Length: 118
Image 1 (tube, rainbow, N blue to C red):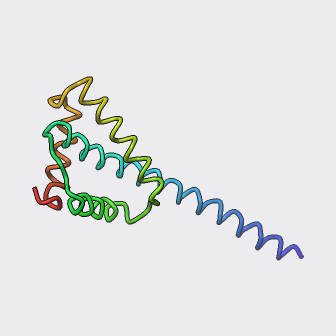
Image 2: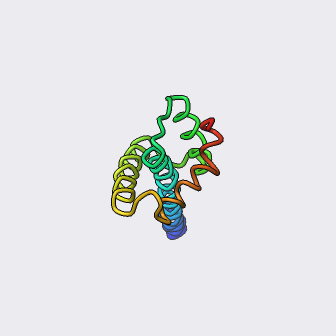
């Protein structure tokens, strides 16, 4: 009886520890996803860039590879909306020549522009 209880307790603690690690990975993935989508939005605003559906698909595929397909569609959609709002705020308040905007543009140019065909 005590052995079963000990095995059960060990399994529960392992599950709790594992779920904490998963949440930490998901939080990291959310930061990475939002950073890349901010780069896309800043590129659109600062350079008046339009993307085709295939270009979006290629960029999303690259971002998903970077985060190892860690996030579901609902989370990604919310992060895309948040990134768009933050990009508009950033470029409106500080302009496209601000250091933060330039960092996002550099990220776009180094990682996303090659897969977008630009």
